[in-house]
Image 1 (cartoon, rainbow, N blue to C red):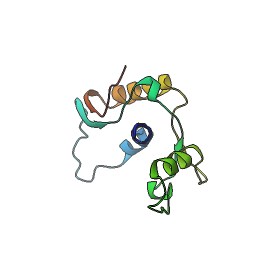
Image 2 (cartoon, rainbow, N blue to C red):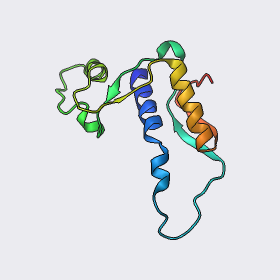
Image 3 (cartoon, rainbow, N blue to C red):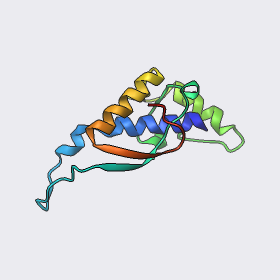
Length: 121
């Protein structure tokens, strides 16, 4: 289960990029740049960290599932061996994972977070 949580945290980090900020604001209002409290951050202990990749949309990661199979084993296999042309890869190390989180927190002025586990920063 923790592997899945780490996987989704990585996807969230990669998915939050500066390109999305370049969209126009149709109402002409200013974009909010104040402090943010992130209410959904996946995290884990360093010894639980694992890397892998997913295919987007996420439904493409496991397209068919037989309920008689062990879903966690199937998920872990697909996470380590994605079957798409351009998978989104998790960081190679826990240190890189934490570095990316720090970078995202600084970039988006995140001053607090509710995490799914400990975030050792």
